[in-house]
Structure formats: structure tokens, C-alpha cells
Image (cartoon, rainbow, N blue to C red; front, side, top):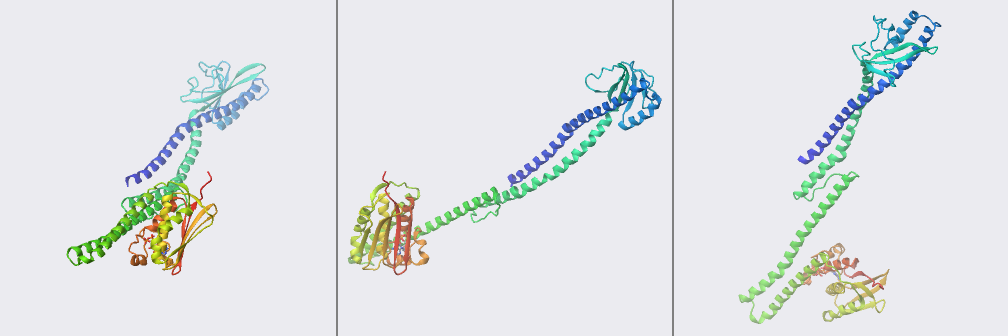
Length: 470
Ligand code: ADP
């Protein structure tokens, strides 16, 4: 809970920090830049103005223009326009004309130095103590006939420049504020695409942790979040299946062990308490042995599956599958003659070499033939074929017997699956045989399939890799 809150909090804090830093940047860096720019701009404009005025005064001095006094009102208008004071100063530093009409005319500027501005075209100062505040001053010489008659000086209060620059700064502030508000969109997008899905995913993870594996995380966006949710859903589904499988497995194992144990116990008790007379001992003890054998078979089957499960590696060799089929079929001779069953073996070639685990393939054939015999009608034939197709060797075991009902065809591969017939007629079935067969074939990277018609028979076909000519 705490963690989820803090992610959002962090993002909001980051957002606020972004706003604050943005504001500080504008108010310091931008305002300074804006002011410096404004000073340059104003100084250049004033300097142009000063030169224009100086040009006009140059003709006055040479006597070709109006006199100083008639130029005065013009000067005032210009001063008003450029919002500065305009002075005309002679070479000695005595103010000749002053647009502000303050009683400065005739005063001498102490320490006046026309070269003081140096290469810079302006200076910012109180201009030799003439102003009680800071002014931006520019000057232009009045020249004519290779003479400098005096200077035109323009003074603008620095406060005015500040005012102008801060006015343009306001525009920047407003733009920044709008940008800040617009960037809320990022926050909204983050909330919708990351925060809410993440909240659901975290809640789902908590459900899984507390054991509710059926929970589905309801995030279906086509992005990383959706992918993460789908992966988690898949994972929990698999875990759930596994759990269910394990429950079933234990139920099946317990059941399969209990019934033989119950009958063994029953027979032995009956022998001890005399219900079974000694002359029948042999009959019942034979049954006890049969049950014990069933238990052994069950345990062996489970062990086999377990080793296959844990990727018990295959020890592959090249061998002739025809030979293995013949040998395995021969080992069933006794059972077959009792039931009147015959084998029909067909090989497409005299020798069919495969690359596989011999012992495990023997087990596959054994289980398939065992089933075929179990479920065959008496006095029928079991066909076993081996042939090459598409660079693989196929083996088929086909019986004429009871077949498999359509709705159980898929289930026969499950561990402990037994048809009712198998339970009733043949109590020695474990339901593990085909599960083992499938595991072995899959471990070889091959497939096994079944075609069956109820009441007609079944055919199991599996493939094996051909021996390479390495
Ligand atoms: P088991 O034979 O010990 O019962 P299997 O795993 O070998 O266990 O087989 C599972 C089930 O598949 C059998 O109980 C039976 O119903 C069905 N089955 C397998 N092979 C055949 C077959 N050749 N003909 C009909 N049914 C079969």
C-alpha cells in the first residue's frame, strides 16, 4: 500500500520540482538575459538617435540651419518620444541645451570626458553626479569642417529599461505557466497508462501471494502493462493447473494404492481368523501376490514418469527398430496364445535404423502391445508396421478390439486415466502406461497419435528419428 502511494507521490513531487525549477530559471537566467538584451537594444537605438540629432546640430553650428532656440522645441518632442533627456554639451563640458528645461543649461559637468565611454557606445552611471538615479547614457559628437563643436548626450533612466524588460518577461511567465498546466497532460497520461494498471497488477500479485490463483488481472492495454498483466495471468493459471494436477495426482495415487492394500489386508485377515480354510490358502495367497505385483507395477510406473519428468536424459544409439519390434512381440507369445491372438508384422525395409533410446523405445512398444492385447477381441490379429516417411520412421500398432470411446480419446494420455472397462475387466491396469509412452516419445522430440473406433479397434502411430549417416 505504502509503496504504491509513493510512486504517485514521487511523480507529483517531480512534477512540482519541474515547475519550481522552471520558474526559478525564468526569473533569474531569463530576466537577466532579457535585461542585458534590452540594454543593448536601447543603447543602439539611442545612439542612432544621438547621431541624427548631432547631424542636425552640426548644421546649426555651421550657421546653415535654424538657430539653437528654434531647434529646441523639436528636441523636446524627440526627447519625449525616446523617453530620455537630451543634452547638448560643448567641448568644455558645459551644458548648452537641456531638453528637460531643468536649470542645467550653463552648468559645467565636473570631470566630463568624451572618451569615457571607450569602445562601448554607452555607459550606465549617475553621469558625473548629475542624476540622483542610474541612467543609460550615449553620446555622439557634433562635427563639421574637421572640427568637433560638442556632443549630443542622451540619458535614459535605467528603471525604464527594467520596466520594458520586465514587461516582456511577463509574456514569458504566462507562456511558462500555460506550458506547466499543459504538462499536466503527462501526469494524466501517466495516471491512466501506468499508475492505474500498476495498481491492478499489484493488487493481483497480492491475491496470488495470498493463494487466490484464480484471480484475473483486468488490464488489457496493448503495451508493456498489458503484456505484464497477461504474463502474470498466464503464470497464475499455470500455477493453478499445477496445483489442481497435484491434488488429482495425490487423490489418484492414494486411491490406486488403497484398493490393492485393502484386498491384501482382507485376504490375510480371513486366513488368520480361519474364514479361509487351509486348502484354499494357495488360491488366496496367489491373489495376494497378484495385488502385490500390481503395487510394484504402480510404483515402478511412477518412478519411470518421475525420471522422465525431471528430463531424465536419453542415451541415444542407432539401432534397428524391426529387431526391437520382433523381440518385444515375441515376449508376449505366452499371453497371446492363451487369448488366441496372432501378430502380423510388416516392415517396409529389411532393416530400419533409428536414432533413439533403445530401452525407452522398448518400453513404449511393450506398453502399446500390452494394451493392444488387453483390449483385443479373442482370436484376432494385431498388426505392427514400421515404415519410412518424410525422413522419419513410423511405427504403428493396430488391434481389432473394443476401441476407445470418442470422448475419452483425449484423456487416455493422462496419468491414472483408465476406462471403466479397464477397471472392471483388468484390475492390473495402472493408467500410467500411455502417460509413460507419451513422455518418452516427446522426450525424443517426436509425436504419437491414436486413431480408434469403438467396437472396431485402435491404432497407435508414433514416429522416431531416422539414424543419420554420420
Ligand atoms: P492401463 O492400460 O493400465 O489402464 P494406459 O495408460 O496404458 O493404462 O491406458 C489408459 C486407457 O486407455 C486404458 O484404460 C484404456 O481405456 C485405453 N486404451 C489404451 N490402449 C487401448 C487400446 N489398444 N484399445 C482400447 N483402449 C485402449
